[in-house]
Image (cartoon, rainbow, N blue to C red; front, top):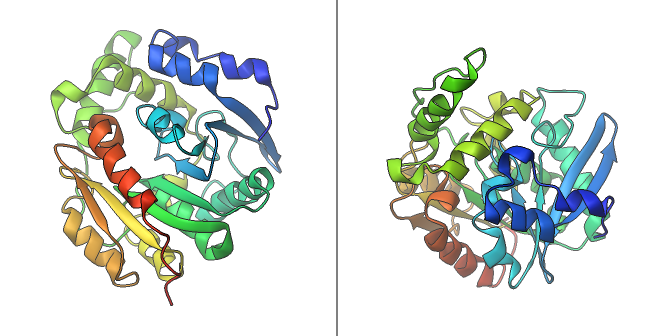
Length: 295
């Protein structure tokens, strides 16, 4: 993968430059800008070796993985994209269609990897995009690891979100803190300045409606069409999609060999709240031989 604009790889968003980890990952990333019919999509990568693609959740971007990239890049080529309509990437013309979003990601990924099969680790909304990619082109994806994903037609809870739009600047930080605690992070002590700044940065950059086309069962329907092996990582205390074993049971209706790893003391954003435990679970799953496709 080559840098489309090497200088941009060293420029972190102004609101986030004071976080050493974010600044370091910006400085060490390889940045690639891929054009599509409605604009561009921005990708970043670190490390060398077999590629693994990280797909973020709704109202996020590549920084959903900020605490996991370095550990993974020690042995793999880590690729992270701002999904269409989020972060630095422009949306497709159809803001409502999950297929339109996944097709853009799949096409750009194929160009960058030359068709080499990749592992995909996909969080929340990203799980639907990943499964649609796998259903379209199974040969391009070795395995899927889905993290705290909705759309499985299992019981869910709706968070007590407080609106930020239109609120004065001096109130927005407190609202972001509340919203992170209501849905994303289990322990109040996990809601640190970096989590708040990431949330505050990405929220206004969301320019698509694809996130409203997951619930209640769109992911399950995509999984039904997917032969690529699937495994799961779930936060023990995921608020919107509780009960990891119930969610795993839904996936196992179509992929009975799917393995589940539960991250203790973690909420929905498990890889941020408990990065060491999450990384251990992820590395364990990635180290296992890829299973044959499901019938």
